[in-house]
Amino acid sequence: MAKTIMITGGTGYIGAWLTKMLLEKGYTVRLTVRDKNRTEKYAPLQEIATSTGSSLDLYEADLLKDGSFDEAARGADAIMHIASPFILKVKDPQKDLIQPAVNGTRNVLGAASRSGSVKKVVLTSSIAAIMGDNVEMVEKGLSEIDETQFNTSSRPDNQPYQYSKVTAEKEAWKLHDAQTDWKLVVINPSFVMGPTLENIPSDSESLKFMKGMISGKFATGAPDLKFGFVDVRDVARAHVLALENDDASGRFLLAERATGVFDLAQLLTDEFGDKFKLPKSIAPKFLLYLTGWMFGVTFSFVKRNVGYDLKLNTSRSREILRLKYTDLKITVRDMVNQMS
Ligand code: NDP
Image (cartoon, rainbow, N blue to C red):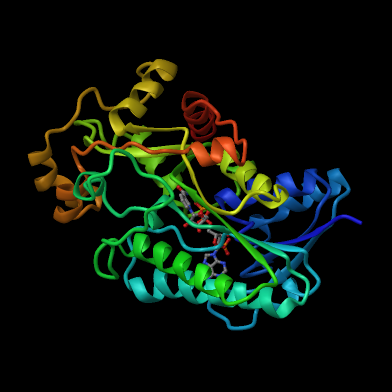
């Protein structure tokens, strides 16, 4: 009989690709959604279920409602816990980011423990749970960043999204260590790029970043800011590999490469020429101290991130998960083709 997988956040940017892959592999998928009336968030997934002949069952559940995942978890073999808000500008960090991430993790992992059936949980954490600011490589005397580190610099009032992710992941490990029923595998993607599945709407910062880039946000100069980048389809594949591989344990940092915003723009210029107002140079740091607010970044963010190198060691994902990364050039090409 096909294994039954419960997925939270399966209506999101990353989650929709994962739900599609699970359905195509013949799993029975239990999709938790906040609001069943928002059919546009999951109708394309129902079509995939119909065409693949796999089952997709809908359950209403909210990260903030205790016990709301219990019904979906009961009888499931595994849980993919992806849901968590990925929004950088929020009014109330506790309410909008930290509570859904941390209480939501308690709620979903509690449902795993109460289910009597779940044997594995795959949790979508983030590079943000590994590091807070790019300066940390220098501050911690590291030559590269890998899964052995935890973000120690983010706070509720400074980088609250990053704080929500590291606090939620630590909570997950605590809950994992207190029981023996289910195994935990954590995926820590860097900045995810690539197309959305069937244009399913999402508030993900990934989409806002690329929309900003092609609409000329950095036309006067790109910040000298490095990120790890990874294709959304590779992130979904990594979750499937983590689910299916019995040797997978611990954390997996995902990135095809770490590169600067300007170099990313260059990939787009190579592909699309002058079609978009892309940056033609790197903006000096002092200018960003003055103009950062226009991009929604604080003085402290500029100070601790702009101009620092970033090196990521992703060998665990390549060697244990055997994840083959999509070239970033293809990732951004597919993403921008969909947006323009
Ligand atoms: P999306 O905004 O597209 O997806 C977020 C998902 O979480 C949606 O399905 C959303 O449901 C669900 N969700 C949010 N709040 C609640 C809630 N209160 N109750 C139930 N469900 C909720 O973002 P992404 O796909 O980009 O992000 C998914 C995960 O990946 C997050 O955990 C994020 O931290 C992590 N991540 C993302 C990266 C990226 O670059 N995109 C990088 C690293 C990690 P609904 O459809 O109802 O809104």
